Length: 128
Image (cartoon, rainbow, N blue to C red; front, side, top):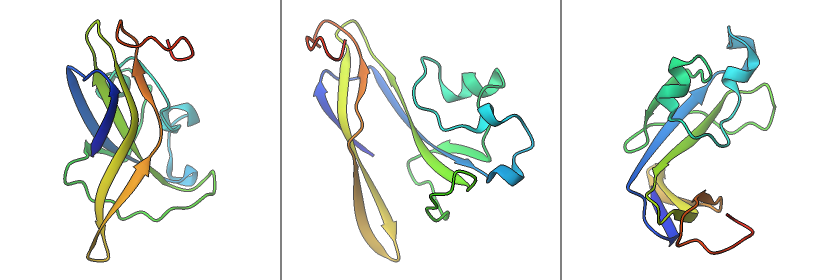
């Protein structure tokens, strides 16, 4: 994982890979299995509270993903969870470059999502 910091730097950054089985293999309520868009708690905290379920949750560095992409809402999925800790300055990540190997070749995928923890360095009123 290579985050691109538009503004600031995080105090700490962690990256996790979460795998979720297809709906037919989920024994618990649907909400626990939903993709995680944003939260102020860590994946471990959410799991302890019964608000996040997964087949596996591992550190992204060195993680192996063997699941193919499938657009069906009932299909299994894999997602990358980013956990940022910021100080009063804030941090703005405007993209993430995911480097991986597939079929014996090195590849990279750019994820153009923004991750923002507001602080005094971020002066864009549309963001904070």
